[in-house]
Length: 287
Image (cartoon, rainbow, N blue to C red; front, side, top):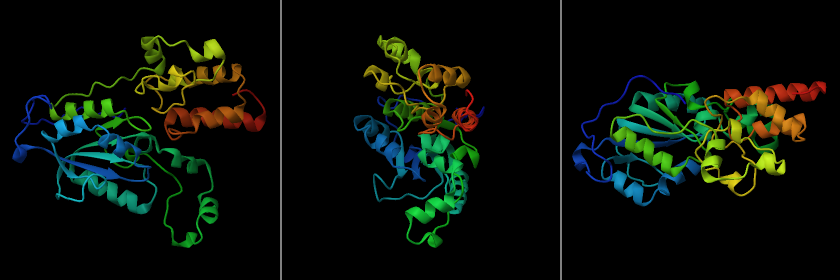
């Protein structure tokens, strides 16, 4: 998680749902999209009742997916979805930072480069020639990078997509001038809290739960499936031990590479683990 020591004080420290702020005093919220699937923006819309309560205390000034009404900046809070993939993206994210008091990145694309970060290990020119009839019309970067690689980010909210409960918590924390209460421990803790049987221990199913940050409620393990790492690496991810366990469960080096290179392939911990497994795959040795 990327955090900074400075905090943003606001004149309204009341709870979001119980003491609405007068409309003319509400801070302005903007929601921005870069390279992404829109899933995290949909998570905002899926807040439904919570979003209506939040709207009493915050002015949704710019959110094209929700409304065509646009209020000019500057903005007190900007939520940014998506990764940086074009030269225009680089320019635009700096403009957003300049007119935003607080910037919160939401989702795996914005915090780790997303699925599109798989280009970081590939030939982008080859991709363009295969996908597009006229690749010469495109202007794109060779890499897909998180927002924090380009600007100062105040907070990162993980997930593919983000969890709406965590999203509401971040908004409430902003309105009340406090740090969000978001867990940084692993999915294994969520499994224990739910009383789940450990999937790799019980069935030998590979699972990234030990190195993945909590936030999904252990959704996949609750249905007997291994964790896919949607929320990225937890704060003390031991990927070396995780890789050894995946190998003991029968995964080849090539499969281990694919396990790490999904939603959060560009996160430093998962990227390093996948690189190590890829190197081992090319030499035929253990990862």
